[in-house]
Amino acid sequence: MIRRKYSTVQPAMHAVHSHCLSRLKSITHGPSALITPLTRSCSSRSPCLQTNRFHFRPLHRPDLPPHFRMPPQYATALLHADPTAIQFIPPLAQKSSLDPVPSQRTALEALEATPQVSDEETRDTLRKAAYALAHDEDVVAIPTETVYGLAGNALSASAVAKIFAAKQRPSDNPLIVHVSSLAMLRSLLPNQAIPDHYLPLIERFWPGPLTLLFPVAETTLPPTVTAGQPTVAVRMPAHPVARALIAIAGVPLAAPSANSSGKPSPTLAGHVMEDLNGRIPIVIDAGQCDFGMESTVVSLSPHPIILRPGGVTLEQLRKVPGLEAISAHSGSVDASATPMAPGMKYRHYSPSVPVHLLEQPTAELILETMKRLGAHPQGIDSSTPFKIGWFRACPLESLDHHPEIATMIELGSVVVFDGRRDPCRELFRGLRSLDNDKVNVIVVDGVPDRDLGRAFMNRAKKAASTVIPPRS
Image (cartoon, rainbow, N blue to C red; front, top):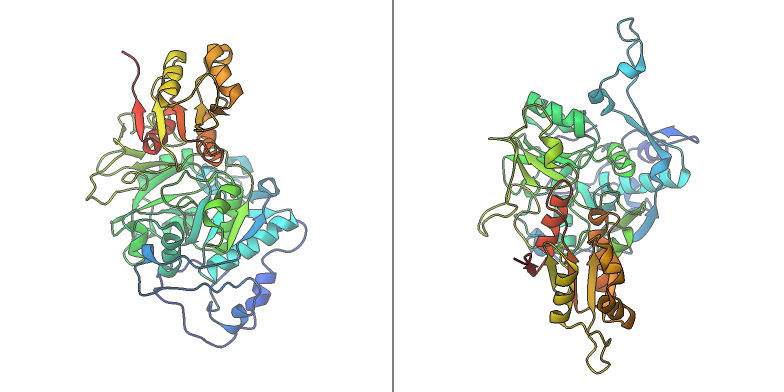
């Protein structure tokens, strides 16, 4: 059951409901059990929940605004989940001679599927995380196909405040709400109706890395989710763990990237632990994210526009009937304005050292930049050690045999992270890896600004302190 009104305070203490713990135990059973949502039949302050061993008790500073409060202190638990152990079972077909074949079910019907989990450890992880989200109104770091997200109950002002506190996120930066079904999406919209012009995009790209801006029903969400705007950004994640967890918790989850605000987004559970260990109760580890960059954000009103590039490209969107003329936003807004979507206003994705982006890298420009920044063909001077990190995305084979660059690498003046196989998936991992290698500066090879390269260049430019244009 999806709760329609958001709460500003925890419910008062009330009598113990005898079925509460039995309900939790019955969420899954057997070797391959269908998952049913938790309900909020008991208060998260009720004795039966307080005594549950998965209940966390953070310290709060209610006298401070949400984004300036000290993050709660936790003994962060790292739990594991196997995405391959989760399947989604579509609704049972109506027994009718008009539609006897399961394959005739529409793509929209498949979006109402129920998760089925075959692995005991994964079921246990999902139970614990769902309990923290739905009953404790706490936050949990979850894997998605884009990046790891810091999830909290989108209907709870208390849970949303914990997201801002843990990330130290600016309060005017709206959040993306994640749903597991179209029924959950409808619960957020005026008259619980999905406007018809959204359906072609939903049918083609959900579940997946596409976020859509919808009109939001009044009083459904805390204003902190939308930054006080009349629209809400929503997507349905394709990652089995994320979608299953939302279905089990039974509430939509607000989930920005699970990192300290401004740092490179996390694509591994280890990245989350680097930033948020001790600030959140649970991190779910399901391996590296498949795409490695945040979702595409699209607004359809007053005209179709891409507010943030991501895993669904401009070229793909233009193939959808009615979107042939969709354009792309510049990706930035005025400092005094409230952004319509996350990732538009503030500097993001930045490691602790300066980043220099080469828009169109060549062997000559790469070498020239490294020398100018302080790399030496003779190696590191022990009296003034200086290391350059190089995120290599340029596929030029001549770089493999360039004598000066090879010598710099061999002698330690240049540390390489090779992201050529999949630059989008590896950019954030590479920036974090080079930062952990204690380099003094990072050079990033740019990629062609088209298709998925738009998302790469958008993130690389926001991370960069300097963008080096191509040679004339």
